[in-house]
Length: 349
Ligand SMILES: *Cc1c(COP(=O)(O)O)cnc(C)c1O
Image (cartoon, rainbow, N blue to C red):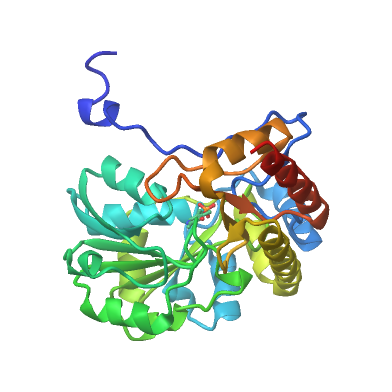
């Protein structure tokens, strides 16, 4: 193997997804921000119907899904690129805007895939810390080929106000990717910025609010010419026929998504209050998760204590994040077990 894989790739760690308990384990999984509620029954029916055509390649541009998204979000189909998850769309931004390496910038902490993809692409990475909804000036001044802004932010839960995003779009010279993976849980969308800025790409995913993490469907919104260029660098058949059927049916049933998202938001608020009463500070969150500060006890000990009690949350061994854990919002029953377990963990302190 010594000469088979490039040294540059060998030196990288790769992306570390949240751990996955074995299927039979009775573990409550609150570590990857999945939706605890299943997708719409209309999704199941659409996927079943699509099975009869599995011998045929899917539509290269996911036309049916794209029309459904255009109609739901009030844009033209040509403003949308459908991806195999928004993770693929993040990768396409590198292929299109920094194909030979270059510079990318983003506030940290944030979604760790931005850095992984940047390293894979051989890009220089400029970061600055932000713990609330302001974009650090160093990040804007970096003159980056791509600037990533995750709002609502994972893992901290804050939002960057739309006027601030607008200001960044105005001042940035390269592509500004606004990653709105969690916006349906009470955030404010910046989607309309694509009408005024040719350098803005807004990303959405069906993995979280639409309960389709297993299907892999993401949406990129931008000006028609930007979308056309991004489409050039994708795989020809990047979204499977099954995923297109699932995604289209989900977008045609937004009431299902909204009712599940509302339940998650209600549970999130209840859990935040309960944690506060126990002396844990949960940051305000516009996502389907809470950032919980564990004080002197620390994030790692809390994570381990919860894991020993059958509950998986996310601990990030990164600067600014070791003092807390990120907890995805599950069903009310899941969260009651979580609250009982964290009370128990706190007693061992
Ligand atoms: C979950 C998540 C994604 C990935 O979405 P997929 O569509 O499942 O690839 C992208 N960005 C952020 C910030 C996320 O949390």
